[in-house]
Image 1 (tube, helix red, strand yellow):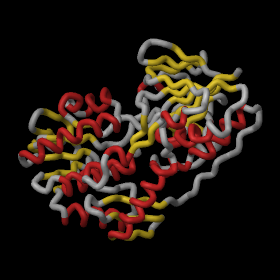
Image 2 (cartoon, rainbow, N blue to C red; image 1 turned 30 degrees about the vertical axis):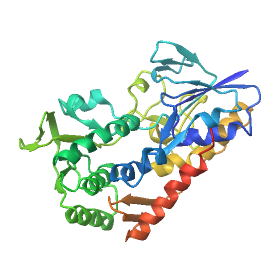
Image 3 (cartoon, rainbow, N blue to C red; image 1 turned 180 degrees about the vertical axis):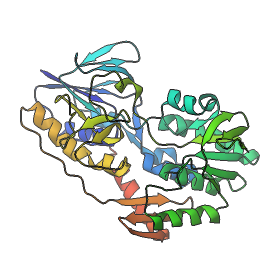
Image 4 (cartoon, rainbow, N blue to C red; image 1 turned 135 degrees about the vertical axis):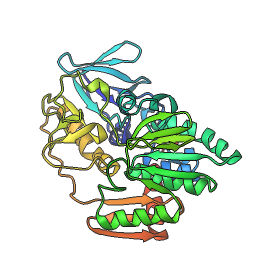
Length: 368
């Protein structure tokens, strides 16, 4: 009996789980390690903040996938990985051995690293990750904002920072919002035409943009690298994802940022029995942005290759598409679309994004 350990319940693993009831893995014991009984779809979180969705609209429950399967679900988080010993250590101190390991644990915000860069952030900031924690705390912030005008500082000028700043502006019209983009311009990873559209949206919404780096967070204010202090009631930490700290001493080959280095099969470049997909992994054969679009599309090929190696068959390479459709919500029911150098903006783009997002949830939603 081989033992497959699925570490995390990210987008790619949700697809794998959706196949197990109808296509069981003969001679394989499957253990799922995931701290929450559901997955919150990050693509719909700005819509949740803006008030377009209830949190239940953004949820994929895990229990229906496990029904009629022999999968063992451990509601824990990993604290260590020993690739040499082929074992995962959990937050309760227990150890789970594996024959094949698949990692799809989703993006994290390393509080220790952030605290070193911005002392006080751990105590005072509202972190976007883990997304379950953010979703639980947002209603409390919303209640505060409905009683008095709040001053928000959204830290991070990428897609998450832009969408959250716009969503907060839409939901809390009396709030004052500053987007602190760091040393890069807003939307630096997007083509210039998209950056221009993003800045126009922020200007229209009266969201102040500061291309500065935050160096400290305290109650009621943020200190910037220039020495200036920004009055702030709610600092929202929307900076990019970090690699999980437990990967550092795992023995796996990692990239310069500490993410799992994987090949064209989404397999570790150092350990053939380990696969990884989504934000936790970096392809070494092709350069890809760390995007939810790629994380979702990694599911079917990861599932195919896991099934293959567990059956003793060679895996198949997965060539991801070079260009993807990116959709940025603008708070109200409008959005910005980009495909390569092409871009567009309007209500029809939001309609399309809403249709795609709801379709994803529906595709993986089953009656309990």
